[in-house]
Length: 418
Ligand SMILES: *Cc1c(COP(=O)(O)O)cnc(C)c1O
Image 1 (cartoon, rainbow, N blue to C red):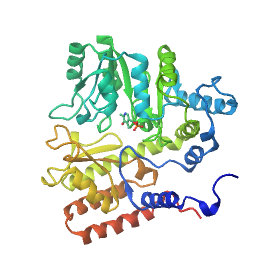
Image 2: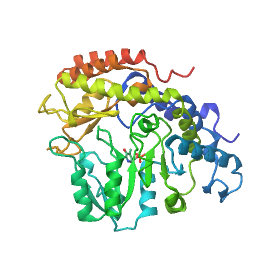
Image 3: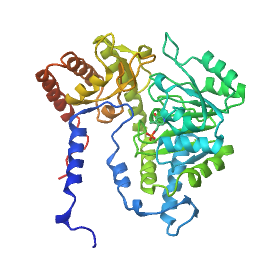
């Protein structure tokens, strides 16, 4: 073999991968958009399929040798259609952002008006942020959460829709802790003659597991990432009604991507299979139960939950009532030292910038995959609060780091390879 011999192995990078496995095994992973994929999903991701070029779609490829890849991609498509009850699926988007760009490219024109949730109130970059292609190419208008209840306000969304006459309304969020009912979006879209896109990147696993309403019967197009609550490989997916199928496929390839990542497509197929098992329903329910338990325990520790709590896998925590001086940025840094990984997050109408913030976002998909339940959520809240209260005391933080490692050791994720 012309590959480097065993003695020439890249020990530098593999050493770092070992270090990262150790970090994932010994710390609490509370980033709401992350999860632990199964060994099967990882095996497919690291398979020989990474070698294959397959521009096109099953049965219509530009290169030879795609009979096996065609079967794999067709299985992925069939499974995800069944999982969500969709007419049509495109499993090729490399990521959630690529999926969203393909939808815009396929269904609207540059300059068209689109209505979406403001980034600083829980929307996503790809829903019209001025630094993202969505905001650069399209005329995005934003709705915001209500000033007092911090929830979506459909009267406001309707008013804006009537005022701006968008071609498309984008529903879906990245840091919004409440249930998203699809019907009111559909009603407003119908009233103003807009297309409705629902981006369920975060909640796809909750939808698949029946713990959150499924927007597929109401939306023209549904996009999602496969690596968040759905617990698959990093990647994106688009579901559409039959009417938009051809436009979406064209917008993914050749519109915005080249060769698909068939190793990722195979891993998506495996993840869809896993999500179809009865145990995934239990998993989805437990994610939500854990989030509720964690939210309640955090409020007992003196934190304020944005919107008063959560119905989903995540919560946004307002740090101000706990400690007016404490920022999200500082919290993220000190909690990382205690082995608790989460991200700083703006709260609605945050007085601080997105780089500093007055809040953090916390999610339960990863710890739930590990097998943690409500009693562990109470411990996690205690560890978070104790770390933040003792943030200038390295010995106290080190003590929590040890407690976190002991807790994680009881719920091992990826045992070290022999
Ligand atoms: C995560 C997310 C995306 C983007 O996914 P990437 O794979 O990171 O590109 C898009 N939309 C929403 C709502 C998200 O939460």
